[in-house]
Image (cartoon, rainbow, N blue to C red; front, side, top):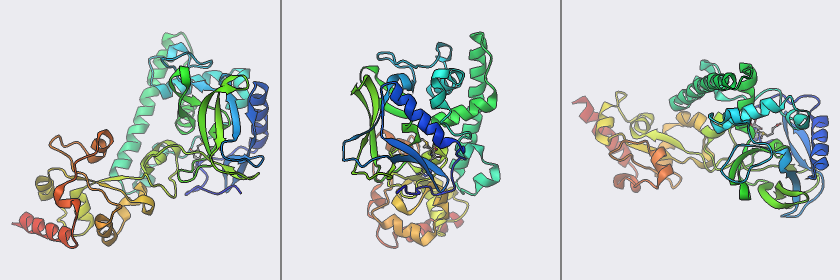
Length: 380
Ligand SMILES: C[S@@+](CC[C@H](N)C(=O)[O-])C[C@H]1O[C@@H](n2cnc3c(N)ncnc32)[C@H](O)[C@@H]1O
């Protein structure tokens, strides 16, 4: 059965005609030489894909020919539907959004683009400041603000590019919706001779995320009925009516919130960056001024891996005893910013950060003792 995976309410209203849309979409893909053994269903307000027949691991559930796929430009062999040349100076996601907007007027693309939701997902950049502050995460709030600003800047850039090409600029609401839908619907794929591309693939973009046990895997294949295509393969045995999910990638929760408008319930890849002063303040042991911490720990940052126990939206709400317990537990890794002062999360992405020797194996009580020593130094 279709599992309700959403943590929050449905991200967007699914149009009433959504299922006739997806039938038309399937016919369109078939008419271009594809194969569709999937349908759409809505459970608890969330539309997703369902298997139309039972399948074994490795069975092809869906095959979408490349002429039905919108792609970014790339260095490899060209793909049939790359963005219009006048968008070339813009970031890849803006190019894809403008490509989709331009093709909305093209009859060929109607079955695909009308299957998109009327509204974009409830992304943090759309939230009012009061709603954002409920996340209790300054970095998350700042990032949402920056995304809002970035989107407006991109709109102005897109208008300039359109004007230089002698075209009408898109309306800002349509541009924003298209870009937000591109964020939440595109795949990054190694596409054989076409190189690595970001693609908007009809029907695949109806698959919801399951990062723990996705039902299907997507891949480029040169062996479609009519040549190259994107395929969905069954990743486990499926019965008719089972939800067909994919994984959107090993991202932390902040990434899911920012680009997809939801936070997975179980996410083994979630990480939260916490500066040591903040960590100690949370523990209730450090003085609120924190100046002493910043000096003594030289902008020490912690990379906190909470596993399925937490998410970025509630990280600061975690109670101090549990935080301290986690600190000693194996789920937690502490990393330290080096002399460059770069945040631990950024360094961790580049290469494994050196572990801070004092924190590597933290004995019970050590953190509290450290906190109280620093607190007494701060009050001297
Ligand atoms: C690629 S679309 C998936 C299909 C989408 N449900 C639809 O009806 O078009 C991605 C969007 O689906 C929703 N979504 C996907 N997986 C989800 C999940 N596990 N929980 C909640 N919402 C999810 C989010 O709104 C996300 O931005």
